[in-house]
Length: 97
Image 1 (spheres, helix red, strand yellow):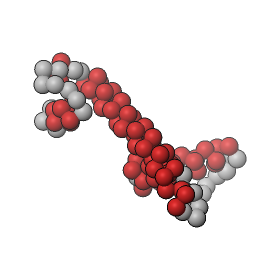
Image 2 (cartoon, rainbow, N blue to C red):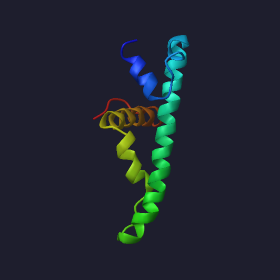
Image 3 (cartoon, rainbow, N blue to C red):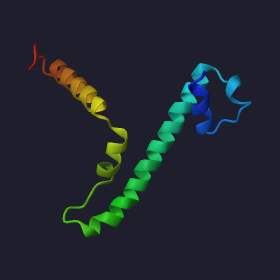
């Protein structure tokens, strides 16, 4: 509660609203808030890429601007492991390197 309350106020809850939420409702609201911010960052990156691309030799893609904000090294490792497991399963491979 001590850590969740400041987060709740930062994402837009008013003091009387927060205590009435269940933990699941708060968590879902927090996920939705993060998704809204992520989509807004990618939207801004789209327009920034339009502004930057004429100044560069190779045009820059919006994901090249926004991905570093949202994709961490830990996420990259997790995705690589998932992809490796999927490929092992699809091609019926054993072991690994």
